[in-house]
Image (cartoon, rainbow, N blue to C red; front, side, top):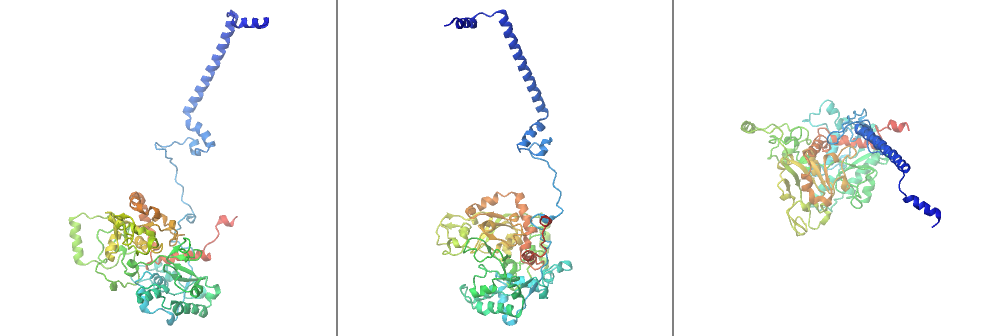
Length: 555
């Protein structure tokens, strides 16, 4: 080791002198001072944060996108963490929102109804028979345009002027925006099948004997079809497969017109092959209960849609087919027939001795009336969904044609499921039920839907509805989602638990929407709302009353 290194080593281990000790104490005191200053500064920061927590933290979190501007200025939250903000003011232009106010027409298109010569009209016997079929919508739509509102209707004054007969129909074809062709091919085929013992492959010369001669007359006797190539003409096709029952020649004769159809199906071919989504308008089906037998829902429920403690006297279970020949079905006002003296006396004593419920609740959870198809149908009928409704022994060759053993929804005490009920009994049960099951049949459409709406029953689409490829009537104007429940096929077995999980508030919102808006979709004669809804779509087709908004016009 060199002399310098040895000296350095000796310095490192040599005893501390007074000078070195003083130097070390000075450095230690200076370090302690800096630590004290840092602690004091930290205390000031923490105190500031404690007194300005919202403002201090929010400036950073606003930059990070985590809090609203309201939080940055010190707005407090309640104990549940919910914000208390002022409600937005109503819009000056209500049309910016959906669904639209369907009571306000987009326009009032004028419709001319052709008058076919007697030899091209259906026989009266065929027409009368068709009134008792599900194809009655052909006749009802025609009557709503061509006949005055029923004498029993309260539609007088402005209300009568707003009826389709007065507001939409024109007798001058030169003023018409659209032309209604009074062809009733579904009624023709219904009569054919009745005579053939319900052999639905029969056609009874419907093409050459009925449709083609009538369409030839329209083209040759009037100039209007040729002027537009039929684009402004309306034909009703209320059967499952629209115009699929006719020959190619017949279909070509009608094809350029707009069809009013009861089945809207956008599933892949072949199931959605007959619905032309770019041209056809989906309308409601007629129902036996309302449109054939004229059972009036208002004889079973009050003005708010709550079940009556007892149906009114007009809802007579002894009423028969011949006694129901009223001019139009009624769903908005009670029947004018009063109860008998005996019934009034009985009600007086009942109300005297027993507490009368002013607004009874619906006590049944769900209802369904209908069958299960045939053993050979397989999944072609109802997608197999209805096999869950009835008890099954697991034998696919016996009803309800299921391979699984189960008790069926019908075994549940609050599920009212049966193949059939007498009309007035069915009406009583509808009035007492919250939800109506709407599975498919051979198609996605079901006439039960409109019975549910008329009686204030919330529809439950099971393997049907918009989420299943079904186009419902007037979807651009009617909020179907807000007044129904949709359950996909793969959850059909969970229907009971799903319905039980719906809260009372949610059910009441949907029930109220059904009663206030859903009934407008039902075919009836007092107000003719179906034609008013059809007219809204016709306005859009020709852009009548549909103008560019200011945002578009200024861009």
